[in-house]
Amino acid sequence: MGEINFLDLDNINTAKVLMKLSTLNYEKKDNSQVVVHLDHYNVVVNSFNGSLTEMIKWKGYDEEPICKNLSKLIIDNQGEAIGQVLDRYINKYQVKGENLQEKEFVKFYYVSNPTNIVRNQFGRSWINYDSQLKNGSAIIHDSADGYGIWAMYREYADYKQYPMYLERYGNNIMVLKAISDENYIDLGNQIVGPKYKVIKKYAIND
Image 1 (cartoon, rainbow, N blue to C red):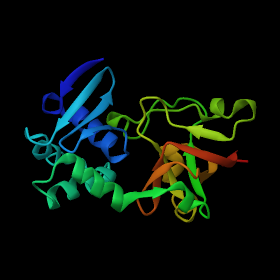
Image 2: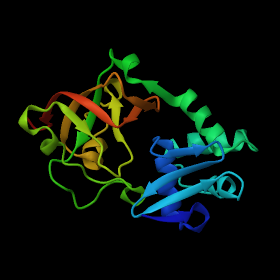
Image 3: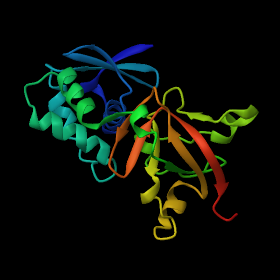
Image 4: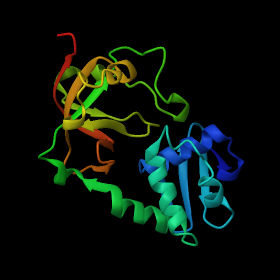
């Protein structure tokens, strides 16, 4: 796998790296340097070569607000190394699965690969969840090069009031529980994590 400097990326791949950092999909070498696995490259993010300055120039916040949370911490803590900022991010937004056991989450999804995936330019891709649930498994998991699985807190997933959820994310539903020994990023109305336990699933038109 080749290595590339964060500063050499185009805008789309810059956004993908921000997504990876925001969803905790990175390898921390030390406080000054982290590595993100992106496609066929290891992207090196260095604190002291201008990477953080370039990182906060990306303006796609309306499309990916999770990245805004990380970028705000970089802005508010200028002079700190990337590892320190990521530690702050974890302390503020990470939740242990064991602390979410009383909560249920909703995942809207497509059974088959759709022609258009919302925000796929930032790395999101279709996952065949039904295939993962064959042979009695009750666990869904992220793809090998993924960005986490996004789900809504159940109280925010009212598709009758907000039918655009079905249009954007699919007209099938899974009701999920967090897994105790996994870590999740809490966005207030959504949660992002690597694995979930499926309580039930059904099509909206059932």
